[in-house]
Length: 373
Ligand SMILES: [Zn+2]
Ligand SMILES: [Zn+2]
Image (tube, rainbow, N blue to C red; front, side, top):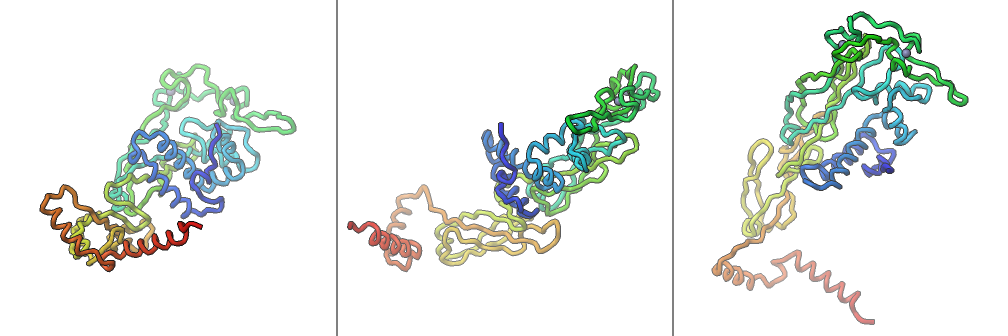
């Protein structure tokens, strides 16, 4: 199955900068969010596809690899050890791509892998910030064998295949490649009598609980880095980092665009025609919206400063209320009569600005195109 190009998935050019990427990703993430498209498999696929594309393109190292080697390059990097591409790339792959239990050793102690955690937040949590407790998988030294993997808990002996190096050299065509030792899987040691608890691995899966502080103003696509909270490094190597990736759920009232919020406000024809005041919801309570006389459907009213305070600083955005004039329903006989009476007085053009300009255009259209030759 062929994979779509990541730039195509996000609908951006190859030169797109971080901001463009983020904007494109947010739009797709909102549009195809599972909460908004329950049971729609195509939407779910699109959502996953956008997540994957963004994850790669938002990371400068992964993007570089993708630009040079495409999907293929990323896949190779994800595999255990891999042949590597020579200069530098093996390092990039090893650090960025190894999964928590995957990834191959490269001889000596390896820095722990980075972990990613997607955190779903409500719009309110994202706007005001929150503190969330998360549980993430981790690897710990096996207790009975003190991480040695041996039944007696003493250090294992040296691997005879690689003589403790963890790597072997393999001739492939013209090239000599360094590969992870297949006998010890890069560990450099061989366990002959393995510990029963961990079956010789020396490590056991576990979970750790972390308190993550989310600053107010974050949005879908933002990542919070928790240094050193990734996978443990081997032996004395440093641990990886944990990236908490924010995913904001769709809100039933508000739509967010950067620091601005949008909401749709239904207005009766009476208020729309005569003007008036309406109470509208904001993220932090209620506000009064003044509807001016002769308001048309689609008019945007701006409530300054009632949007979002951006996480990176800058001015707080606005709340934009999109007015939709509502046609009254379930009218009584009397009400219908009153409307008809009103209608008879509204014949003049000046009462219907949109209709009159529309009628002019329609007339022009008929005159131009529908005159029989
Ligand atoms: Zn070995
Ligand atoms: Zn053990």
